[in-house]
Structures are given as C-alpha cells and as structure tokens.
Length: 77
Image: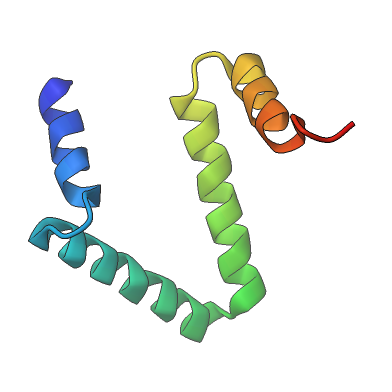
C-alpha cells in the first residue's frame, strides 16, 4: 500500500514530469468527453465517478460528511 501511495503522490506533486503527464492525460480525456458526448453527459460521468470514489474510498462516511459541512459552515451563524 505504501508503494501505491508514493506513486500517487508523485503523480500529483506539482512541478514533476509525472504530474505534468498525468494531468495532461486527464485534460485530454475530459476534452474528448466534452466533444463527443457533451457537457451535461460529461458532468454526469464525473459526478458518478466522484460518488463511486466516495463510496469505495471513505470508510467513515458520516464523519467525513460532517467534517466537510463543518469546514464550509464553521464561521456562519
């Protein structure tokens, strides 16, 4: 698991060639989706991917949502 995290860190660390290639590929995929299927269908694909990522990747979902809500609404009363 540590090797995977290290690989992901290298892929997303700004200023590295790996990050440049990764985000260029991601931009290409998004551009192709927008051109081929349109904005709303692409947005639906992105939302479905994010929901799947949340569902599969977050162990304590309630606590995660509570932290996000508190972060956005902490100073408002």
